[in-house]
Image 1: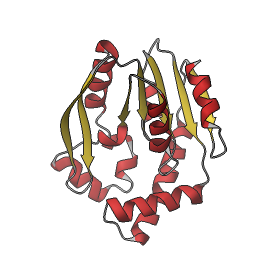
Image 2: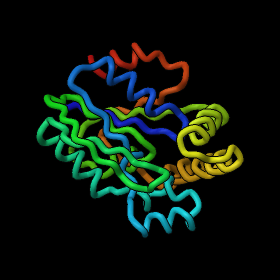
Image 3: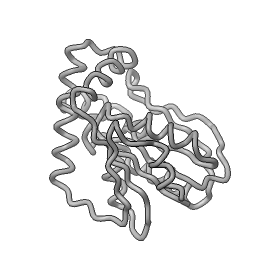
Length: 198
């Protein structure tokens, strides 16, 4: 199975890029780390008291994500589709079977951290390098529409998440067997796809 990791700060276009890849290939599926936040009372409390909680590793349900990732890798099928509800702070689980999976895309702000835990796996790693202001515009628009935030709060949260993402990568030494590619808004997607699937 071919593995592709897509990483970048909030608003950099990870979901858009993943969707562009998935419509071009057959037998692929996407695991989004945004749908694997921890739930329960502890998570609800921590999200109120820890600034930038959802951008920190402490919020990520690594165990559940690893379980789904390994199942797909081992069996070539996906049974569950998970969706995190930011308002209710819970993960909704839907039965949605996908068979004959040959391509697995892992997308999200925790993709790079997760990829560093893999041993003896070859994969492509796509890092989105997008202008900070452009990212902020996208995130603020999304957070107002989908997460019920006020504009000022959305801007404040974005700036914190930007700092957390880049600080996290600066402080960790990621060693892997990845073919790492930097993606900008000028990247030719068709040429990228040829490189990935040649």
